[in-house]
Image 1 (cartoon, rainbow, N blue to C red):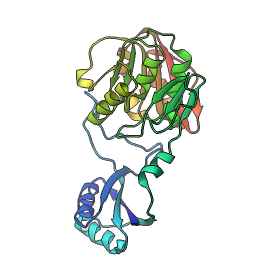
Image 2: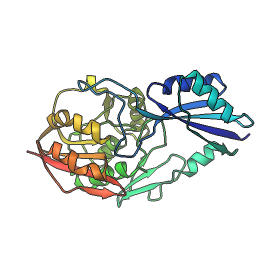
Image 3: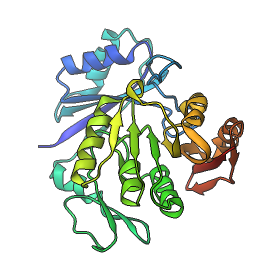
Length: 295
């Protein structure tokens, strides 16, 4: 069976109502995305302890999947009216029938991060069995190693971990950085995330890789300082979290930050320069890795 996709632009006041309207009209699935994703205007919507509550994006794209044959123009108009929208901007696209499992798997080949580190989906054989291989499948939490921000952090860990370090991975997502740190010889490893699904995914991925690491919500984060703090999030929450992350890093310890667009690097670096001697940024595509040593 073939399907068709409908994407409608919606403001913060209409996105949820539009999503509900589309579901009531027979959508097989509905998702809400940030219309400004991967641009300088990208916004976090999840709160962090002490710095805000969860919110909504100001500009959204509501995506819905329908069976073929429906008049999507009529669906879009009716859904917009139901949601109380004054303006309607939408696009449609045919989605051909295919083996979705195989199609998804075909997008994820083993990723060579460095000479001794690979990210390998569970349906692939390790290209280099004697290397450090992290078995990781795409899932509910961000971080498969394919995105430049994750790749930058992994490469930095490969180059800088000496063994035995205490690691804090703040915004752990899939747990990939925490798992990599442990496999690279780190000592105590803690992953923290505000998303319960990320904690579940991180624990499952650690178990799949025979790695011992702890994962928790920020409210349950134990006191103490790490030798290395890594945070692959976004520039806005990174700036807000700077005092917390600085407090979590010991004097002489190192910090590694990503999720930062190239044009945001100077601004984020200036915030962290209050506590850290910042190194020159490292770029990959349009993304940045910032690192520093705690004074």
